Amino acid sequence: MRVSLVALKIIEAVSQLRRFFLLKKVVILASILYIYLVISHI
View 1 (cartoon, rainbow, N blue to C red):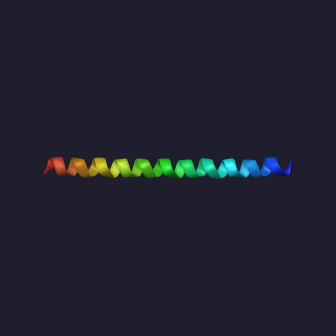
View 2 (cartoon, rainbow, N blue to C red):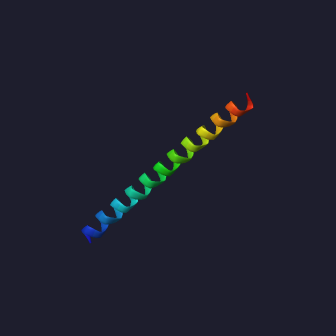
View 3 (cartoon, rainbow, N blue to C red):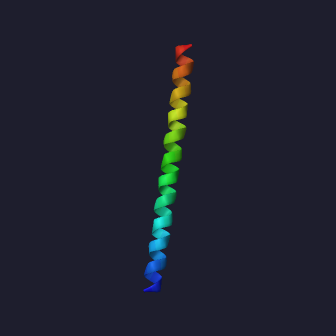
């Protein structure tokens, strides 16, 4: 019982980390795209 609870907590933490990294990737990609658009407009 205790072990499964710990495993659940670990899985939850991993999924949150993955989501955070995905969000970070999206933000980085968006900023790169924005900078590219700004440069191409000039």
